[in-house]
Image (cartoon, rainbow, N blue to C red; front, side, top):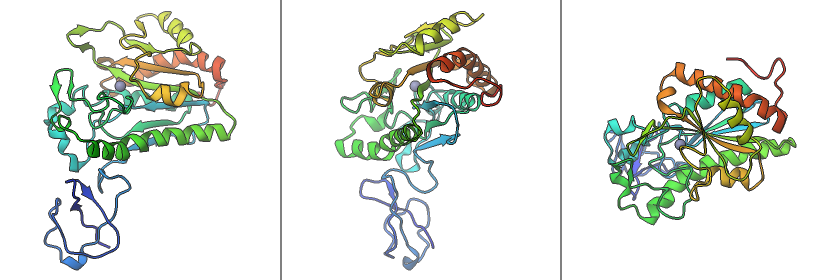
Amino acid sequence: MTRVPTLCRHGTTRFEQGIPEPLTLNVHSTSHLLADEAVTVESAYPLIGPGDPEPYSVYNPEGKAPVLLVCDHASKAFPRAMNQLGLADWVLEKHVACDIGAAAVTRYLSDRFDAPAVLAGYSRLIVDLNRKLEGESAFVKVSDGIAVPGNMDIGEEEKAERVASFFEPYHGAITEQLQRFQQRGIQPAFISVHTCTPVFNQVVRQMHIGVMWDQDARIPVPLIRNLAAMDGVCVGDNEPYSGRHPHDFTIDHHAERDELPCVGIEVRQDLVSDDAGAHKWANILADALEAVLSDVVGLDTGPGPVNKL
Ligand SMILES: [Zn+2]
């Protein structure tokens, strides 16, 4: 069966199923097809078309550790229909588009602890998955001095489509993973992995790893202590960002509400911008986390489940 993409009324690629109908506007050069070949399929997500990535991925879904890792800003991807919000390619290589190295650090932590991880599939510039949807900060107009043309005049309908396509599926996947723990009678640790630019608004950051937290000290306080005791590691306590940021969403929504032990991590991007760096700093972080997770959620650190990388 032939699939033919057509432009929907909002100018985005949409697929509808089953009913042959004449081709309308076609964004993928298939206008040579005969009308009766035109079968369109409704996408599960309004702004995501065939060939685009899924809005999230679950890495190591069968991981046995009582730990869930999440990575809100894992990806710099845009669906083809969104034209990169009018941004040049070089912007997508910058920290404004995604947390450079965060996906690799998350996967290494997942491997080390044998823990499932949920990773976002698209750029934070489309909708920031770690922002409450009220207010403007989920749809940023200017990030670290870079204007985002496609966010300047965004209307409520477009916001709703982005939420349905990216925000809800990602957070739905996290909820599903947490329900799987609940069904097994496990209260997991919730670890949110980010990376931060070494220079932001012309301020140079000295810390290597920042630990973000609010009310729940169970993981952050001993983690900070362990990191601070390591040679050559400079740790930030609620630096470079505060875990008490009022617009943050992911930890507040998924972990604090259900009183899961939780922590937000920021690793400096210049340390993890290549695979060797991500591997090295994931191991440093895991070395500092291992005993804490053993104490707080009963992570089994004996031979077997915790893999030295
Ligand atoms: Zn981030």
